[in-house]
Image (cartoon, rainbow, N blue to C red; front, side):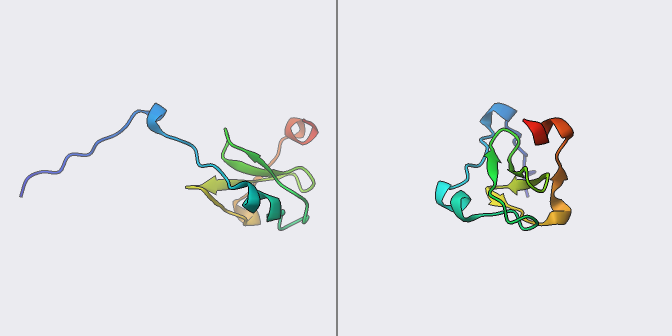
Length: 78
């Protein structure tokens, strides 16, 4: 059986997932029930009301408080 080779693409081939605008309009923070902002560069849904950033993995929002990242003081103000 021939050996399989693994191809690793450079990072510029990686394309971040895009969140559907309709989905974004109905999603809310599970903690505060406030609206979310999508930060495409970080692949996160951010809630300033609760101070949490929820990851988006492979285009799927992970809306679990234990998976969320705490926003820094600067992020909460900005």
